[in-house]
Length: 346
Image (cartoon, rainbow, N blue to C red):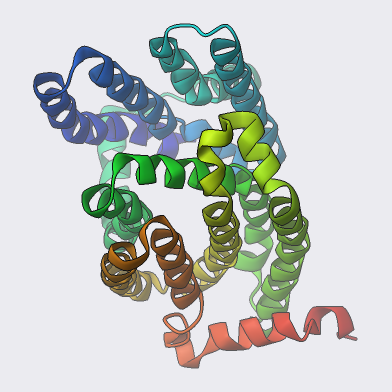
């Protein structure tokens, strides 16, 4: 509790340091409407970055609470968006649900945290030690984290540059629907991680992680089936016939999201063996591969190329690039999952 409370000011400082120049750029180069959307997005991301209470509940194996709170925030935001569209209100009112998506979960978690736990006061000198520890211990993850944040957005940036804003809109709709359910799997993954990390026996840890892979597989398969058969219907219902072209990218990006879930598990399994340096180098390579794939496929195939570039990058990141770690332990993990070894273990 002291550790995560000590990071709040650090998070705020870093976020403002990065976001203020961006806000200034949009303020002086874009119209007032465009700037307000950027400002709303900035506030929403600020609330997300300050939500250290989500980390606390995940660490305490209470990710179910995080999931329910996130669902509530998402539902309120979607209801607001539907009302705005139904009543044909000024599009600028959309700034409200954009902010509420992260503000509601933060507020609920904060109130719940303060109700359950007394405020933990951290002395200034101890806070400095905590911050120093975080910076030192997390330095190996910086490149990896930045790469994870950058490469999924390369498709949007390059599609806008080489194609058109209309293509970006089609891809954005597909990406939004393809990833809106991922938090459910992430919550399940987070719940299993402490048991995997605490396991001293490497073979048992591998079996536990394979079991988690199988559980996630049972969750993502129904999603893929629903998207394949009803994805077009949902797009027309939520966005209208103008975005019907988002269907095929939606199917591809949903598959990409499924692969990324297994990639998350593999990355956490690597982290169990302190493979932070490997992850940093791997994710840097993933970013370079993503740039090359997006450049080639977007220029030749447009929005479909962007979707396929994302899927291919996720597959390479999950498989070949991971197999170099610790004499192919991730390959053994995937093989154990494919043959359903945990289910037939005596």
